[in-house]
Image (cartoon, rainbow, N blue to C red; front, side, top):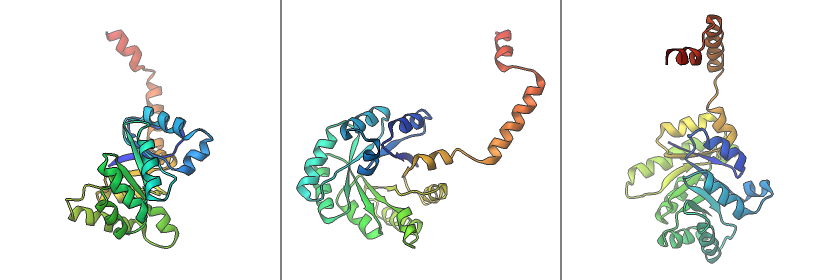
Length: 225
């Protein structure tokens, strides 16, 4: 599974990229607005920080507007993926942009039927929002499972499921178990995946025992060189 981070905070992205575990980035107008910066500057900087796909979302809602904005966004960098809404106009624009060789991430997906339409439109990614489904009493993971089963059963569909609206690490592991190829995570959730109290406890015990020996790996290595 590939891990994308869902933010426009370039300092956060830089820190996560330094782990070597970050495969891409997704942004949206809300994320960009929080930075208080020019959108094009932000997207360009993100594209320099990560080599993988960077989703940049259109603001238009009609076919012609989405296509026009999508072309502009795609011109920022080679790794930009245009993010378009899962609406009739959005899917029409997805087909147009895809036919022009511009990859599209279709966002705001909430059902298996919608995901299938996005794939038929040629989307590179479709983003089911599993956390928002949970918020209204639906089972987001179950909807994700339905989408993944459809895609597994229809190998001619080249669209990848990009799990979005991830709220906690269990969402990530459940998605991975069902074979979802990509998840985009808030920075907080990605950092939480590193953590476990037993890891901290075990490391503290190892270090305490090592300190008692009075040894140094560096000093011993230099002495033996």
